[in-house]
Image (cartoon, rainbow, N blue to C red; front, side):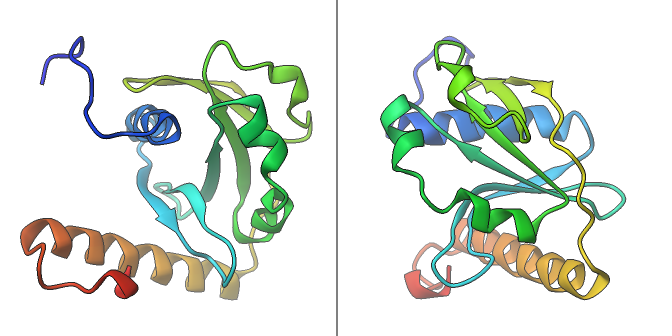
Length: 154
């Protein structure tokens, strides 16, 4: 699909996530979208780096979307670095300065501010890598055989 064609059936946050995942791949990170690290939490993008580092990226498509997010601090205990991803028109001054910042669109992104590092404990890292692997494998299975995997398994 040429870069100039619109991407059908994607919400604004999903388009940001797409650009973020593309950009992070250039940093040797692999990513999954909509992973549940714990009951009641669902991160937009979780990225796994070449040295097992885990980053969480929350994609916010508008001021209202950001202001409605009351759970973001609960994500901090599930990653080594935390980022917001927003488009170039988003009022970035609303975002907490103690978090990372990524400017993104549907095709790419740029890390503007690196999120501070807070290394996960080894046991938590192992759990998150296992969740990441299972989530990625289920997503791949859905692509190979869309009728096989039940929605509650995602």
